Image 1 (cartoon, rainbow, N blue to C red):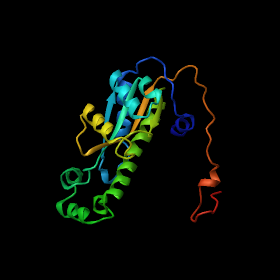
Image 2: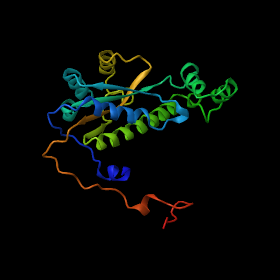
Image 3: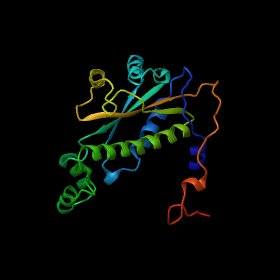
Image 4: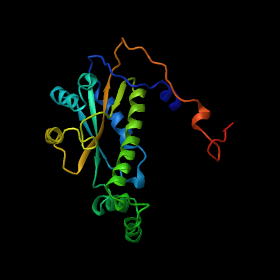
Amino acid sequence: MVLELIEKRFSVRKFKDKKVEDEKIKSILNAGRLAPSWMNSQPWHFIVVDNQDKKDLLKEMCIGQKHVSQASHVIIMVADSLAFNRARFGKILKEGGKDELYIDMVFKNQTLNPALLGDSTLLLRLMEQTTYALAYMTLEAQNQGLGCCVVGAMMNELTCADINFIKIIKEQFQLPEEYFITAVLTVGYIDDEIKIPRKLRKEFDEVVSLNSFGEKYN
């Protein structure tokens, strides 16, 4: 069933003028909330946008992509750059039943605590984590009979395209300084005129090996 959803899913950039029901949006959000997470850190936050003025602002942030403002809802994926500090990460570890000795070990171990490896490695880990959540959300959108599109081409702290505009975005969405937008997900009912595209992917043997690179998995 899940593989069937994956096979049928495609990026949708044209939606009906029809509002998606709250229960369907909440189901998509819960799929993201329950996604796999490194050390259970869950360094994400989801901002649901259905206000047209704010969707228009996000369209501008996403270099004019029309489906951003036309979608029923836009879900902003936000990463917490302080997710691995002692207060936030330590609290999650403690809630998971870890004792202080274990928590101390985690914070001293660069394999377990990406914050010890500098901003670049921390950014990679945060991007990885939010991508897991996005992937689960796209599948639940498909499961709910909806279309969606992950938008990564945008003006944000990662692209450094327009620092002043980034400040405006953070103010408009009341984002704390330590949070930054990694992607947005447009969600809506698929327009009737859209033709389902053929999914183009590399062949199985091109991307799969058994035990060693290049050894076929028969």
